Image 1 (cartoon, rainbow, N blue to C red):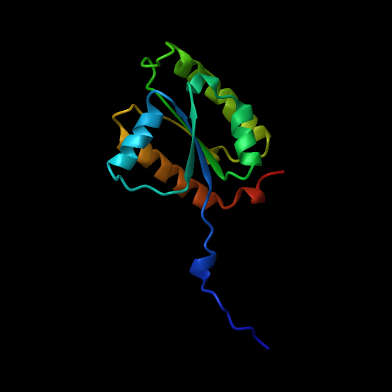
Image 2 (image 1 turned 180 degrees about the horizontal axis):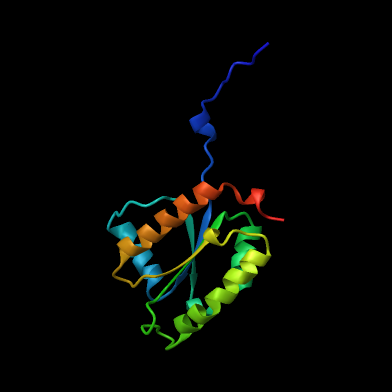
Amino acid sequence: MTMAKTQTDSEHEWTPRIVAYCCNWCSYAGADLAGTSRIQYPPNARIVRVNCTGRISPEFILAALDMGADGVLVSGCHPGDCHYTSGNLKLRARWAIMEKAIEQAGIDTRRIRLQWASASEGQVFADGVAKLVEQVKELGPIQEEWK
């Protein structure tokens, strides 16, 4: 006896949830520009505005993943253009350590992405979201990794 399908497979297609931590001064404005310019990118990202990417720690990323995000994007001012002088340089120096912490938690580091996007780079922001969504789609839901 076979059961008839009532819904198509496309209705059950999984879509990744992305948390995007964006610096207040550059990347958040870049994300806003992407929206006002009608630049198309996946609607999967939920933006969290932070004063500076220098504030981001591994705990922020792990907390987002623990609360159900399948991937995390960290987007900030270009190195040397930080409104707080060196916040993004501190994040860049800490990034390798953060990747190691994510890896030790049993998470594939392809689920996290660091990018630099200024207020005038809406397309850069959109491309970063699209790239992360594609990477995470290849990896599948976080529940398969999270321990």
